[in-house]
Image 1 (cartoon, rainbow, N blue to C red):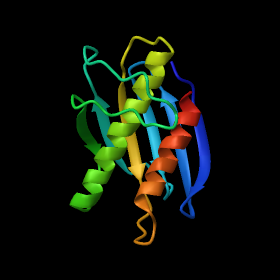
Image 2: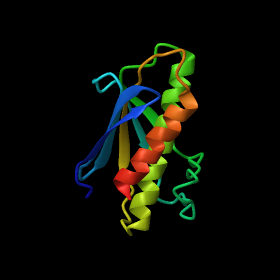
Image 3: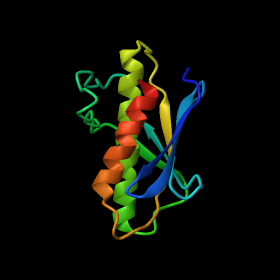
Image 4: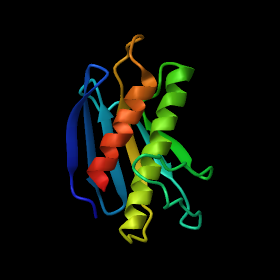
Length: 141
């Protein structure tokens, strides 16, 4: 089981908190720039679907098409943010699953992702996304 890991970073000028907490049946990952849990999405995938374990820290592992995303709490106020939150949840879950598989943890627990991003038209969403994923890698490796 993962213990609690967290970090505070500044991404695109916005303070960002990333927390990873392992439980017996799932892993909770919170990414917040506004101090709230935000939109909760559960990512799940059958154990029979293989993962790409050859990716490195410089390359994000590709989320398998079999990932199932289930909204648990809240919702994105626009179609664009809905798509962005789904992208975050899929990528975060894939990073967690690959990390656990590399540590020989054969269980594939569901990953619950809480996302609350600061809305700023001037912020580069791609840089923020890559920054979150890079820091998540550092937390779970």
